Length: 371
Image 1 (cartoon, rainbow, N blue to C red):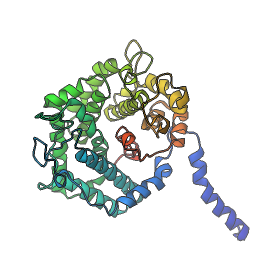
Image 2: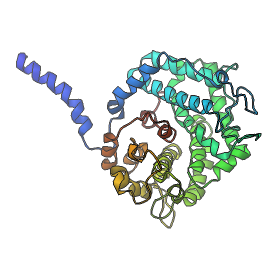
Image 3: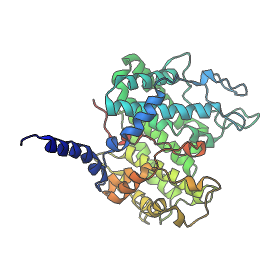
């Protein structure tokens, strides 16, 4: 075809509009890299000059542990906030590396991981033994484990950075998550969190699954977690109509229900294999992930139809771009879930909501790391 000014302009316009048309297309598997491209780079670019702030730089004078131990209490939240911010930075930088292949992002993510988990002088001890410690107590509370739920996305980031971290350091990093998984399985406090019949128990399961997935050479931990999800977690938390009654009974029924729904979906994603889909598992009397997302979908779409009490605060600031919508759209071939996911705000600056929104970079969950 002869290229004149008119044809050139038409072709240029088509090249610009084509991605938008692709994004607007109704599909159960939207192009997450294209949809999130700009927000990923905006966040990652803001983090490129940030220095790691490991726990050892934030002295907790009341902590019964060492400077390397995580500690939080009603009066001390510096470790909690630092862990949250670290867990926001590493996935954003990793996602930017996946999107652009720009080594600067991988190098910066690796620097944060080195400070928190690799360098002996600064690394965090692989436990949450002193989270939510009451005054005078010698250890924390089971409910404190949820403060580390954001580590699941950090663990999900690690395989994408294999080439950006020295082999010896990468081995140390793997050992940290293995040690943390061992603590999750052996600690009394972690066990009490695991056995709670609400989002605290789901937080334990998500963290354990994310750590176990890093050790692809041993399927035994994932098999045990898969069995726990199928035999215990669903029945303990979900009723036949797909609601989470213990979340509804809290002062934040909407927020905690969506929080738990997101964690359930991430657990299904992590525990499913090509031979066994946890997504399809349902109890004989009905409840399962398919029913849970179908039940909550109308209330994510229209918060005003929520049939229970409104949250004590920030009710009108929800929902966010719940990853459960995206993950379930892909698992159940439901384009309407993905369509809704694309329309909801992806981020918030409200700390209370950030703490119950542990998956901010879904690209890292729907993309396979290159070998």
